Image 1 (cartoon, rainbow, N blue to C red):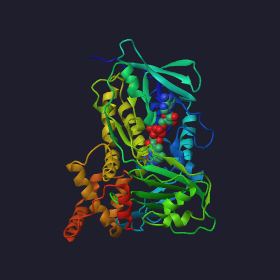
Image 2 (tube, rainbow, N blue to C red):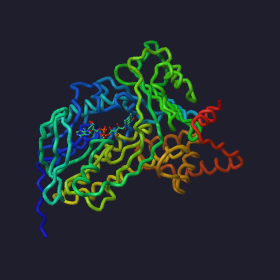
Image 3 (cartoon, rainbow, N blue to C red):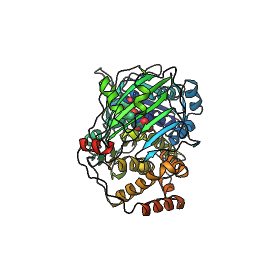
Image 4 (cartoon, helix red, strand yellow):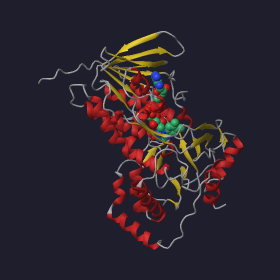
Length: 470
Ligand SMILES: Cc1cc2nc3c(=O)[nH]c(=O)nc-3n(C[C@H](O)[C@H](O)[C@H](O)COP(=O)(O)OP(=O)(O)OC[C@H]3O[C@@H](n4cnc5c(N)ncnc54)[C@H](O)[C@@H]3O)c2cc1C
């Protein structure tokens, strides 16, 4: 039977953050008009904004995300570099302390740009503003979904100006929710007579504290960035120092299992000093701070399983953190949002009807972000204090295997190259099971067969004591 093509006049995107802006860019290829509704009042330039607290913290974009963004916004990378974002090569210019030792200093050919979150978002927003098909309505909050009489199809949204009472109605052929962790879609679905999506929440109780510094004028070094990893399940503290535009460093300290880093200035430095290496501490102890210390603790991994739903209204899609939000310390969130934009583009390409779009989109999105979810949750489940989820046989095997891989990193540059490429999403995780890596892992396993079992720890204080060897 001939199917009537659905009208593709107008699409609405909830949320004008990274996921929402990329969604708008993709939708503009298929709809005559796209409206992005953002509750924040958006800044003209590249300042932080209140509803994006991540702007105060380290915000690293993996190479897979970088590539997708460059495809969506050609020339973006050059614009960021022109705005002063430094590049950071991942082997020569980055010092990473894994729990088994320092990563090899080597040429990886993997270079990221270290733009602040505010700069990246502002440059993407500028591109969106240049597109005459897209309008951003900032300072507006979506308060409800509109549906047809049968409640089978979403037909738009109800919104109001922030702080105002007057309600406005906006009709659309497709509504995409990219409103982040605080998405109200589960509530709105209930109001329309649908079930809420099931949720998986894996909560490692990780907290951030971050401060920005001026890079000292006399600073000379062969590195640009430092990562000090924690040592699961013994030592819950870690830290990162990254350069950013404006000759600044952003330093983010983090602690898992409620060992939250302090936001008090002196205690912040003390926490930096307590890490498994004092390199970050030595870099910042005399550097000029440019900001107060900012804290952040909303870091649970949360998957709202829209892909499992038997019933959803037509013309409604959910993506970005509203679909899967990840522990930010693994730096996968924006790349997962970019993968969602890529999935949206693939699913709309060549499709005449919007009917049942939600089934195909959410299932495909679940596959696209599965690897990032595994990476974050398997790592968080290494802590005995992590809430939600459990270490099943597959997770235990994967954890054991990646422990062996990590143990080889300091002395095996070829393996480290593959490891970094999987971390950046350039290769699937299965690349870590290549014959040469399997061989190295098994050789090492036989060598350590007689090693003593690791001590069992159950409290954070004990983790800190055992892990740091103090
Ligand atoms: C502290 C921190 C550090 C992070 N570090 C990294 C990192 O290093 N690397 C990385 O890749 N990712 C990182 N992330 C994750 C990354 O920021 C997100 O994954 C990314 O921004 C995509 O999120 P999003 O656009 O889906 O949601 P968000 O960025 O949360 O944006 C949602 C937007 O929707 C708006 N909104 C919400 N409700 C409404 C409504 N009802 N009406 C209108 N607008 C609404 C909000 O104001 C907001 O602007 C970090 C996150 C945090 C919190």
